[in-house]
Image (cartoon, rainbow, N blue to C red):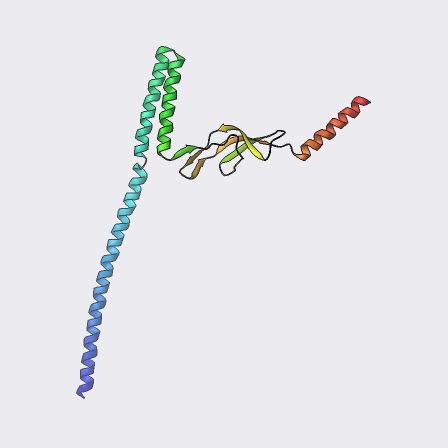
Length: 183
């Protein structure tokens, strides 16, 4: 009979050891969960701070541009000389373009090129003889790309070859006018 008691005692000992191990795992898991929650909260705070102040460097550079524009306006008001004002505005525009370039912003070059609807929005279609395809004839408003993303599409007027329908209708209209003239 001592064997079952010894076996029972051994099993009881193993059970207690497993309970202790399970408690240690649970305690460890609680610490890991708390650490994870603290990390998540810290990351959330950092993301909020980045959102709040992430553009600070850009704003500081733009404030320099604002200062230069204010000086240009004062110069224009004081001297009544359009040339000085124009030079000041040109210098400011150059500086603003440099700031934009540093942020990865570049203008979309589209005039004379094939119309690309992913980068341009057409507001007018002009039919011209000798045009092959759909070509950007005039840029109404400049578009910009930031890094690889179009942040503002160019607004353009496109040139296309005359369509058959419009040339046929104009031919038939010309024939009707000629017939009327003959009568």
